[in-house]
Image (cartoon, rainbow, N blue to C red):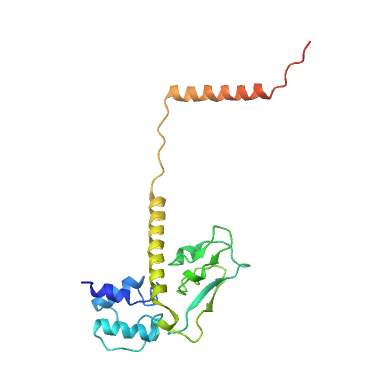
Length: 210
């Protein structure tokens, strides 16, 4: 049987916005299952999300706790291309890899992958990222879908795997070159000299006939 934390996790919108006070949706789900967090700390899930968690946990539904935010329409991040300096900080901050770009080049947002988590906003040093309302008049789960939540979760897992690999590679010591023996160094010097001599002879104009 699936544990309570897993069922709670499945009921969350998977925006990975951290507004609940936990590093991701899985962390919040575990805290709710353990009784360390309340069921009304997820603004993206809104009132319907609270009702879902109430049914799963047997707790009484509560209004969304305003200290964690307010329920509202889903937003999407938009980058002002004229101001983007290509610092790449937003790439690391985005939990679903919805932002693409390379160092010192303009970045852009893939609309279908953006969860509106807002995590890219505070890291931008030139304030070139803003939010646009994507679902006017629809909030919480009315502005989101199970399919979008599933896709966001899969992208979040891939994001974590990419960062794990990058960190592992960054921490790996550079390979140490094997020391060359005196004979090997001497042979390399001779071969380089012969190569230069061959190249010079090929470039030398042919001698004039008497």
